[in-house]
Length: 391
Image (cartoon, rainbow, N blue to C red):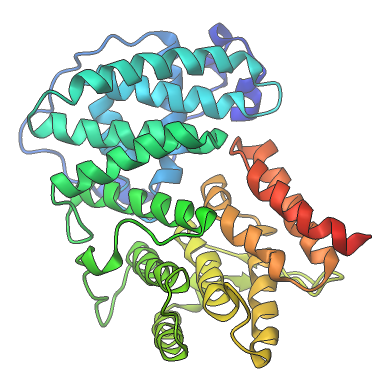
C-alpha cells in the first residue's frame, strides 16, 4: 500500500488508502466511562491520509509487543486533540514514504512536518499536566523513530536521550500500565538496538526496569516478547562489560533457555515447504509478537559468540541460530516484524557459509526497498565482511 502511495502526488492519495484491520483484541477494549474529549485539531486531506497510514502501518510496528494496541488506539485518538502528536505522526509517515521507491516527493513534506513538530515539542517541554507529560514522551519517541528510519545519528541521539530523561522523570517502568508501559518498551527496543550498534551497555539498566515475573500459566505472547527484551538487555550489558565471566554467561544462557521452554510450538514458528540449497526452511508465524524468536536466536548468538566465540564447541550452535534467523527473515512476516529483525539479520554475519552472508545482505537490502526502513549501516558493515571472503 505505502509503495503505491509513495509514487503518487499528495493530493491523489486518499483513494488508495485501505481500511484498518488490526488485532481483534482492539475491538474488546472497553469504552471510556465518560465521553472522549472533543476533536480540537483541524484535519485536512493530507493529515487525515497520513494518520490513516500511521494507524494501519507504522503504529502496528510500534505495537509489536503490545496487544492492547496503544499506538494504534490511544496515540491515534490523542492525535485528534494534540497538534504536536499529529505533526509528529505526519513527519514520521512522510519520512517512511520518502524512503520507498519513487518516494522522493515526500522528503520536503517530511522535513516540513518535522520542523513544525520539533518547534511544538520545544514549546511543550515548558508546559505541565497529565496529558502534556504523555504527549511529550510520545512526541520524543516518534521524532526519534523518524530519525531511526533514515539513520540520522545526532538528532536521533538527542530525541532518544530526551525520551530516556522523560521516562526517568515520570518514573515509568516495565511495571507501568497502558500507554506508559507501551512507551517504556518502545524506548527499550531503541536502547538495545542503539547499544548493539555502538558496542556499549544500554542506558536503561535492566536492574531498574521493575520487570514483573512471567506468570506460571496463560502467558500472553506480548508478555513473552517483552520479557525476552529484558534478558537481551542484560545480555548486552554483560558482553560489553569488563566482567563477562564464563559463569555469568552460563547464568544468562540458562535464563534464556528457561524462556524458550515456556514458548509454544506456534510461537516458535511452524516449518513448511522444502529446505533450500543452504538448508534454510521457511516458518509460518500466527502472530507478529513471534518476532521475539529472531531476538531469541540473536541473544544466544551474543552469549556464545560476542565479542568472540565462547568456546570451540559452541560454533555449531551459533551456526544453527544464524540459520534460524535467516529462516525467519525469509518467511512471510509482516513489515513490523521485518523492521524489528534488522539487527538479528545483520548478526547472520556469524554464518560461516558465504552464500548465507550474501543472503543476509539481500534481506537487508529488500527491507530498505520494500518497507522504507534504512539498513545502509548494516549493509555497509556486512559488505566489508563479505568482500574479503569472496576474493
